Amino acid sequence: MTTRGVALALDGITHRFGHTVAVDGVSLRVEPGEIVALLGPSGCGKTTLLRIVAGLLRQSGGHVAVGGGIVDALPPNERGAGIVFQNYALFPHMTVEANVGYGLRARGTPRKDIAETVRRMLALVRMDGFARRLPRQLSGGQQQRVALARTLAVSPRVLLLDEPFGALDKNLRLDMQIEVKRLQRELDITTIMVTHDQEEALSLADRVAVMSHGRVEQFARPDEIYDRPASLFVATFVGTASLLRGTLAEGVTLECAAGRLPLGSVGAPSARAVVLAVRPEHLRFVDPASAGLDAKIELVLPLGPLVVYDVVLSDGTTLKVTTSRGAGVTPHAPGDAVRVALVPGAPASVFAE
Amino acid sequence: MTPGAREWQLVLPLALFFAVFVFAPLALLGVVSFYDDAAITTPGVAQYVKFLTDRFNMAVLGQTLWLGLLATAGALVIGYPLAYIYMVAPVGVQRVLMLVIVLPLLTSAVVRTFAWVVILGRQGIVNSVLAAIGLIDAPVRLLYTPSAVVVALAQIQLPLMVLPVITALGNIDPNLRHASHALGAGRWRTFIEVTLPLSAPGLLAGCLLVYAGSVSAFVTQTLVGGGQLMLMPQYMYQQAIQANNYPFAAAVAMILLAAVLAIVIVVNIVSRRAETLVHG
Image 1 (cartoon, rainbow over the protein chains, first blue to last red):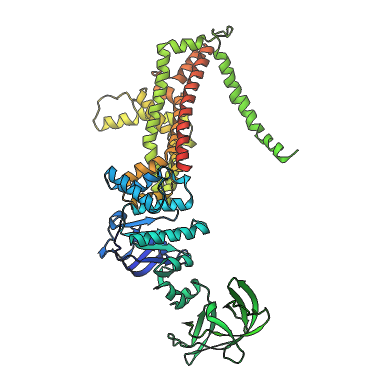
Image 2: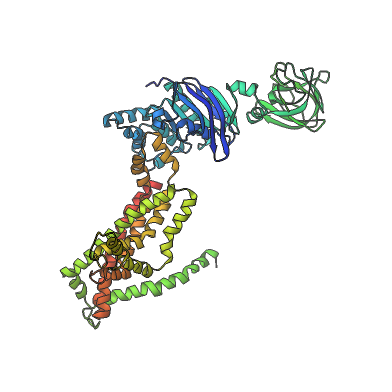
């Protein structure tokens, strides 16, 4: 079975609960067959946005378009949105079979077709043989498979996943992530997933929308989000970043209390007071003759192939520096005096204060 | 002595209370019922034989159980929607509703019964209103009818139906309703297929409470039924106090107890099955 993916467009979606603005003018264009993650801390409006797309919540303003048609007035099933809830919301008093067939029964599909579709769906999520079980007799991962099958059984045009892996333990999580990605590719179904887990978002999604306070801070490919965060919030929320406050000199050097740090090329702000957000792997130790910041090693954390150093600058600012632990290289020891500089060509993210 | 060995002593006061005031009288009642004569001298099963072989007696039992069933059905028909309305109402309305639901529990059953006497009497509210709008010329007999007893019992026992149903409805994950809607089911189908079965444990508990309360509601049965209607509690009273036949009255009591217990056990088995289905 192939559900050709359809495009999904959110146009200026705003939602208020009383006086609080939960979603504030969000516009996103999701390509057909794309998997997009809404990533953000709890309370950033991502789940509200998902519920609006699902049709469970009517937005205060803006439009949702599925496959080019505006669906604002349509109930969930008519807009072709299928949602899988965080706790799966399987009907506890129904067998797996009855759960998966529920949507089809609600649509008045003939019995024979229901049985056939249910069988096909259970095979798709590799749950054949569990048809007669009750949800409570299944493990978390199995319940999630059934929840996916139940949602996919009604052939939604858009698949919505609310914190899909939040309730699973770590080992199972990876299995299910692979499983969901496989299904999503196989069915070529446009998917939106809500998560607060950045690794999950970055590894599964084609594009990630980082949200904060009801707004989309950045909507881009995972590597862009990571390498070129559009805001200080994105830089600190996604991945690890050390922050350095200072002023920009000649556009290419950061002057801060602890010294001068050459940045290579910096595009954006012309403001003088800035914050540099830098990834640990984009910093390195250089010999004392080169330009850079003087620092002292505070902590050494060998993490398999990597070594993470916590270094402190002369003004007390701490930075994280990661280096690979090559053969024959003796790592620095706590207390060592070092000089820190950017890895050549590393992206430098500078934001106006 | 370990703390564990001491703790069980905490149940002693309650156990003692039950032993003296519930089990002992019940045992005494049981013993008395097994005497053949009113003077309580010859042991035997004559009273049971008398009850179970007499058509009139069996009719009284049947009528009592039937009345309980009708009152339970009445409380269910009014109570379930009320509980449902409570669950979907905004918090402010919920507070008011809860007060209204619980209020009857704060007044005695006797007071509530007299209220029904006032409402249904010949010069009662219902008759006055019907006469005033010209629908009737002479007062209709409402009081002292079986229907009056059923209506009064249903209302008086209503909180015992509503409260367990509210609890059961509150235990249902709202996402189940959302999931049902998202899969294309309308409100009605969602209610029938999801909400109703998942609230079954509370519904059965409510039915049980109302039923047990209704079949033994001596005051309401007698005052609203007005003695026209022979029901088990009144029959017992009559046999014990008026006819002075304690063994027969005791046998009537034991038979009613057995009948209600049988129903309770059956419903309990059903509700336990429903419970495991719902909560695992």
